[in-house]
Amino acid sequence: MKKLYVKFVAQNTTLHKDIEQTFLARKCKAKKDTIQKKFEHLMVYYPEYAFLFFWRIKKKNYRFKSLFVNQDYLCKIFGSTKIAGGIHCYHPFASVINAKKIGENFQFRNGLTIGNKANDNSKVPTIGNNVTVGANVVIIGEITIGHNVTIGAGAVVVKNVPDNCIVAGNPAKIIRYI
Image 1 (cartoon, rainbow, N blue to C red):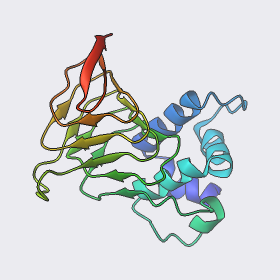
Image 2: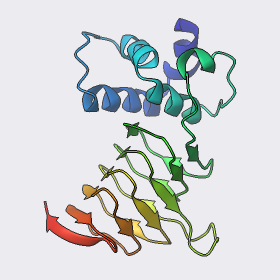
Image 3: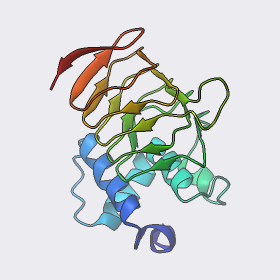
């Protein structure tokens, strides 16, 4: 595992942010004082982190991947999607992510669909920093989701969402500002 850390993680600040955010979001009680120890802990005990790690380093068929990811999450993240550090997923099952850009500290749950409108990959969403998305959410079209947004489970988002709010419903509406 040390070779994996040295080769991919040691100098990658985006991966450091992913590790720190996942450790924080999972409320890990393990006493790990270095980024390497936190990385090793997440790789062993959180296969959904390992799944995102292998996507991030662009090694879908890495020879040791099966030691860390013991199931197929049936999750697709398009290679053209740019995701800043701090991505965290609780259950990546049945998720498809096709966006222009996703900001820092993005959290999502199962059944997420982020995608294009009318099968046009130039019409995909842009998502801000500190966005949390519930289960079974659909975000489609050339829209912008602001910073510090929470999207409730089952929401269908087809219009822009401003900063600092909670949205839910089909179609998604602002529930309140935070």
